[in-house]
Image 1 (cartoon, rainbow, N blue to C red):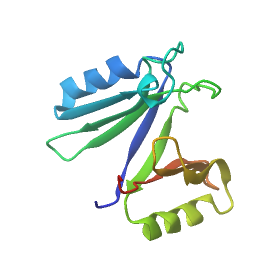
Image 2 (image 1 turned 90 degrees about the vertical axis):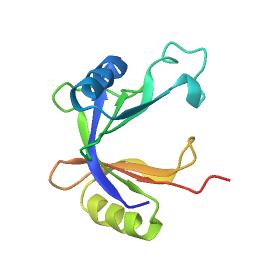
Image 3 (image 1 turned 90 degrees about the horizontal axis):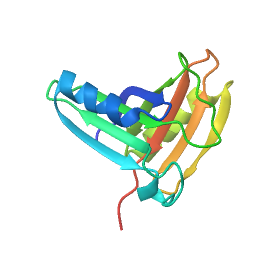
Length: 137
């Protein structure tokens, strides 16, 4: 898998209709994963989107999610730049450079969905998400 760089948008409970709208605009394939599918079944957030991925015929990639419980939604500041792939050495190198002199909000470590993931804000105030895809057993 080649590493990719794309925008990641946070929503306040309306990620599903927003991503369905973007699919209508750009076409392509939309994958939606809910918080309920990821271990939060039976909670008020179960139907909210934990991760959405739109891949278009033009080569655009757009990712999004509803803001999870415990995190603050900030309209206008509701985006990150996502870097993802399966080249662990490459992506850890990006993480080290992006987080140096910045602020780490989620340490780069294995997450409940099985990948290694972290979030930081670089020294220029740009929010980043790094996801290292792990081989499925």
